[in-house]
Length: 194
Image (cartoon, rainbow, N blue to C red; front, side, top):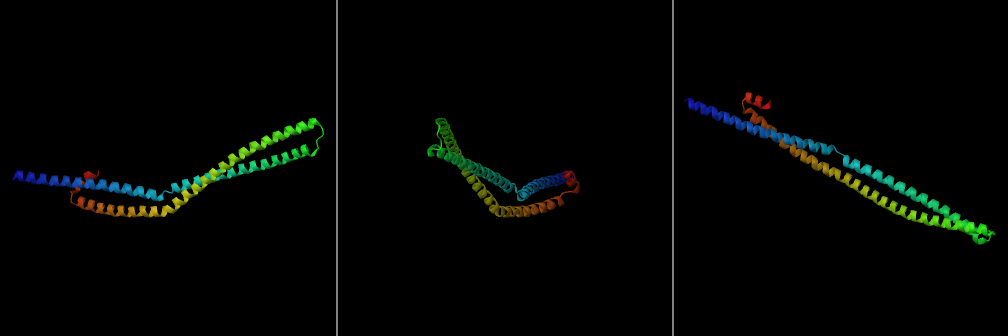
């Protein structure tokens, strides 16, 4: 009879240990689901990609504006230089200069201004390329932002669907946990949860 009781209590203890193991596995699964739900909530609340894309668009737009201003300044300088060259050439070729010394100085000034115009044309070409590249960058940034804004509702819907599925799974595991804990002695549950 003693051995039968010992075996009986051993079987009960083994049953409780097995139940505690199932309870622990369920608790681990509940923690995993809660972590996934928290991650999904964070992703739903996270608009950083759109904010980053907006900041990038603003930065690129500023680059475009700067490139356009530089190009405009270079074009204005070139117009002024060309007018100056026209005045010099008019003096040179209209017979308005009589002294050889003035003629030499005017010719040097014409060569100097012509070189400045050539340098400004080279600079202007570089600035036009820079402005075109900046404009392409702005177009790309606009496309990126538009894509993110367009895709966000579908992505959010997908995340909410996943969130609902995890909520259902979490409820099921919590019910299972309640069932398991109701079949384990209160002293063991207290010890387990401490």
